[in-house]
Length: 122
Image 1 (cartoon, rainbow, N blue to C red):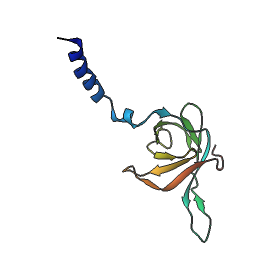
Image 2 (cartoon, rainbow, N blue to C red; image 1 turned 45 degrees about the vertical axis):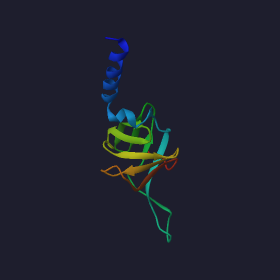
Image 3 (cartoon, helix red, strand yellow; image 1 turned 30 degrees about the vertical axis):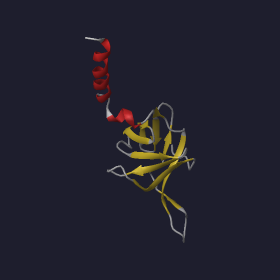
Image 4 (spheres, rainbow, N blue to C red; image 1 turned 45 degrees about the horizontal axis):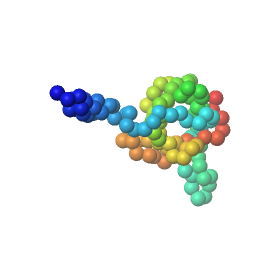
C-alpha cells in the first residue's frame, strides 16, 4: 500500500478527534486591571448601575481576584469561562478590548457588562 493512501485516512481521523473547544479560537488572556460589572440604567438616571460585589481584577497568568477570593479563567477566541474560584462557572463574551458581556446558561449575552478600568476590585 502506498504511503499517501494511508496518510489521508489517518489525517482525517486525527482531525475528527480534536475537541470542539479547540476550534473555538486561540487561547489568550484578558488585559490586566479592574473590571466593573453593571446593568444599563435609564434615561431618567445614571447610564449604568454598578452591581455591588460583582467586580473583579484580572491578574497575571489567567488569574483573577474578587473580594471573595482568587481563581482562574480560560479564554478561547472571544469566550471567557471562569474555571476556579468564586466566579467558577461564569461565562462571558469579549466585545472590544475592554468589555465582557455576561452569558446566560444557553450562551446568550445578557444585559450585564463588565468593563475594564472601573473602580478597582481588590
